[in-house]
Length: 197
Image (cartoon, rainbow, N blue to C red; front, side, top):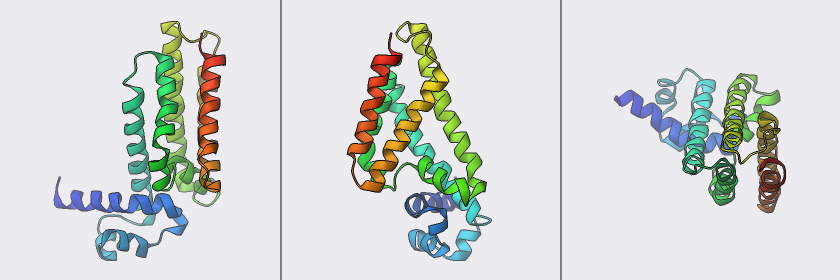
């Protein structure tokens, strides 16, 4: 990496928890300079504006979550085990997720919906990727003959995401992890009673 690339990566890494905790509107240039120890000139020497930083930070935050989750899920061969590993990842990792401000997809989706439409598209891409990822696992299970053929993979993938993100939101707002854990238990019940053959 060149010096400029290293500086840009440093700014993204240091700004990531700030944006994820405070949100786009709540994060100021002063917050970024404080987190990085760099001047405003150094920040804007690497990014065109706050939107540019926010997009880079969002992609960084989602990429980290995605890599950690995929490492857990992709280590399993059986589709049912993969789906259960997905729920286990969030059940085991929620303390780290909450300590870093929560789920970056959820945080950005809530803010992007009305006040930051420029971020809405990237959130839609992330949600589509996650839905496709889970739907592919369900389709794999049909081929492995451990998931019912009649199961609508996309519908169930989106239901799982809805329960997961809703559980994270309720847990964060109420400072009570049981809401997420209850949502994960519901996902496991759906896997066992509705999806599994």
